[in-house]
Length: 328
Image (cartoon, rainbow, N blue to C red; front, top):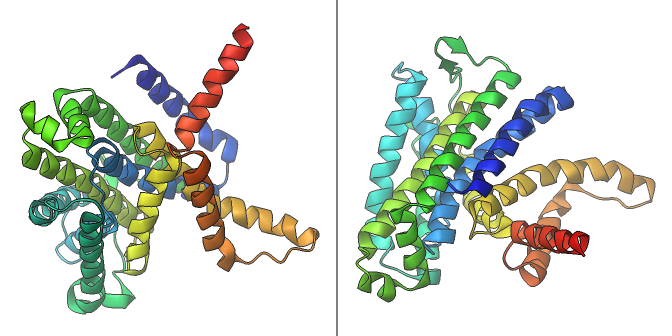
């Protein structure tokens, strides 16, 4: 890890420790827990998109498989949540390898469309296989998790647990991108032919990073299931996969911190819009929650026009410019 990333991780840990002390509200802790799930998925997606240059519109499906594996194995088979999480990871790794081998031969829009089709298939299966997944009614009574016999029975406990997993995910991702594998991924992103000439096994590299990013999504889905204690196909539709890609693109897909920033921004944006609705009514603007999609589209358009490298890179440039002004 580089010194800057270590400093960022230390700052994040300090912010996580301090957040409940300043928020003091279970609802907003819940919002931050959902943000942690999105951050975890986007870290894995950033490795695939930002570093290996492979577009996936199907990661919502891996989140769903992880969530349903956790729910089914614990409610139907009585497995421990931890064993169910690892079983979900194993299933997602196998499925992503099977899906990745043929689809990663495609490039650009064709790869994106293939993964989008996979996400659609998984969503249809979740709805149609009623006896296994509960269908549209979903799975009920998913138990809570325990850590070393300590049950995570409150939002505060789950907040610290979920963000601890995010910190571990960031630590592993930073070590990966600064390793030989990370350099191979960047070479692959730059030019497949050039990377192959340098001895990089292109096919193996693509499949490995695709499986790894899917595992991040699987763990996120399992944590979601054990927090909500109920799952249905609704949150795992195709639009969720599109939203995950949007988070990575908005924050900046070429840096892990960029994906993290995008996930946080778009996870908290609905709360900001909901909060601003009351003030807009005062000045005579009848803002409706249905307009959220327009706001999302407008923000994405503005960022693509004026900050094509993402919000994180824009903030970094502004900070560098500020430091130069201070030195003068």
